[in-house]
Length: 304
Image 1 (cartoon, rainbow, N blue to C red):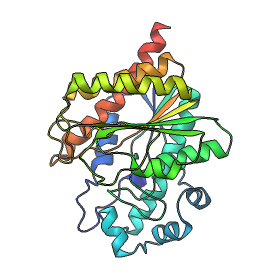
Image 2 (tube, one colour):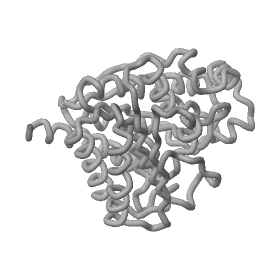
Image 3 (tube, rainbow, N blue to C red):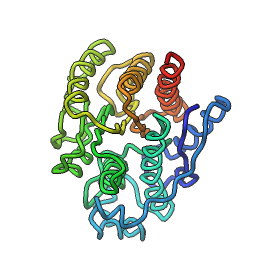
């Protein structure tokens, strides 16, 4: 049984002048529902304002929640923050937080949105409004639910916002494996950054992931992992510079699932990036990722 988190507000109308695929979250939901009854669905509560303000600047939180984000910040985000986008932006971090709580209970849970790793303290960026990964991690630490959280980011873009927002918090570590020459131009400093040259394919990617992530898992010994499961390392992704195959993405996620499950580390996934002209193709990538992560947990449970 895979535990999935979804909120109706994830499916927001597309704002004008937006290149983000706003129907992606609805397609992911529908494709997962079509898979059958092997899921338990959960609806999160929107993240309370004071939780948002524990990570983001209160003035910026006010701008988002009142749909009064200045044009220069909207340009950095990549779309206008309409009232519908504001509601979505508050629901998504609530979903990642709920997925984390469910993972602590069941071993794994997936949010059908999120992974907004470019959002910074006082502005959004790169299609990200609030940083759900940092928000969930900070909240879980501050309420004493867990003592140590590792954020593993396998998106093709560096998790600069997540690294910046959690810097100086020894209870939270960040790992980012990404295309070195891709967005953002100015990188932040994660606990461990693994920049890759353009065109890296399946075998080299997996060798690098294993060689770099396993020592960090051993040394940091997290109580929980938040996983940014971006599917934009795929060859041909509109905003990617790596060259993984469809099978390579599945191998990656099965490996992540197996590593966490074999070590008894609960983990929750957020959707992350994936871009292309065909929204259905992109959504199928995300669905394959969630299924690979969940089936890895189920397979391990059957072996035990």
